[in-house]
Structures are given as structure tokens and as C-alpha cells.
Length: 137
Length: 137
Image 1 (cartoon, each protein chain N blue to C red):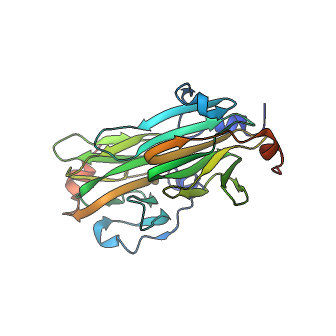
Image 2: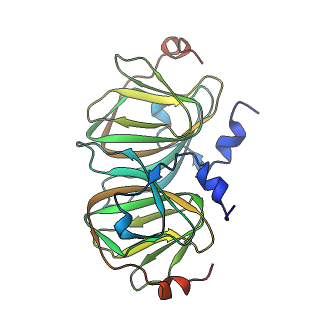
């Protein structure tokens, strides 16, 4: 078992299926369980799970925001021009409108968070192996 | 220890302090940990914990909505004119604009949920002991 694999796979919110819809915007394997997605509610809510080393591309939420509620394992959150922030269960991240950022697992740990998302995402370049591998677990 | 007390008190999100701000709208003791409350984000996010028997008054979210992500224990959710729904960790509830409802713990269990709330609440009458006690744990 990889680090935190059992805890993340048996978290409060089910991990769902392989995240096919967004896999083009991720490095590595992620899983998505859509919890809320309704026309008259301006946020989508989903539980996102990352295998060790998995992370999403740099991206921006336009005319919206994203809130991450960390539910399991260990991960990273980084905004452009700032140091990466190590994440643990119970941590909360707020990404404001227009801020370029990425999030994902650490190199050796599974990771999961609930994402509350409003607005329109713009997906950008991947986080390079050079950038990612330079982060200290 | 009451049922689920240890699990709820040691949940992923800290339970915070006694919910003084809203206690006039609750029967029994609740706790509130505000996770997100920012001017440019149209939702507030908080972790709400209920002692056994604690529930909030009937209320309505106007020009908004509420999403509950159940994180611990056992609770109830009820919309006016419908049967109460028993809640367990991992359950998700969406309350649409204008719908009169209440939520809280079961009689004998601690309960916690993350609440994602938009709009303006209108607080109404308490859930009577008669209504509440008639629910089957």
C-alpha cells in the first residue's frame, strides 16, 4: 500500500470512478465523484482523489472561485509566483477569481479533497516534472 | 460517551466553539467552525456540530441555497411536507431556493456536517418536541 492509500480510499466521500472527463488536464491518475451539479446552484461540488504524483495542470477560474476542503492524505497547492503549500486533512484553500494555480498529491502519498467550484475554468500548461519534483515531501 | 461523540469531536474539520451567533435559532447545543467567509465569494462554508437532540429551527434560504456534506454521526434533514431523511457520513443534501427545512442530530447521537450556504436565511419556528420526538431513530 502506498502512503495514505487505505485512508483515502475509505474516506467519508466515495472516490468515484476514474476522472475521464478531466484526464487531459491532469498528470497521473485521478478519480472524481460528483456530489452536486444542478442547474440552479452556482457551484459544482465534487470529491477529487489523486494517486501519488498526480496533479492537475495550472488553471484559472474565471468569473468564479474554487474552495478546496482537504479530506485525506497529503497534497500540494500552489499559486503562480508563490511557494507551494503542503496540505493535510482539515485544511481549507480558497482560490480567488483569476488566480493561476494547481493542486495535487505529493510524490509518495494519495490525496483527496472536496472541490467547490464556481465560474469557468481555463486549463493551462502542466506542472513540469522539474517544478514538481523540486517540491520537498 | 454518547453515540458517535468521539468520532464527531475528532472529525476531519475542527468543531469550533459554541455556536453563539445562531443559538437563538437552535434547540440544544451546537458548535460552529467557520471555514470560509470572504466578501468576494458568494457562499459561506462552515462545519456545524450538533449534540444529541440538537436541531435548528425551520428556515428558508432566500435568493440562494444550502448544501450539506455530512461528516459525522447521525442526523435528520426534513423539508416541509415531506418525511424526514436520516443522514449518515458521506450523504449530501441540496436545499433549493425558498424551501422551508430544518436539520439536526438524532435524539441519541452527535452529528456534524459542512454547510455551504448562499443567499439570505429566514429563521422560523422551532421544530416542536412533538414533531422531533416522533422521528424514529
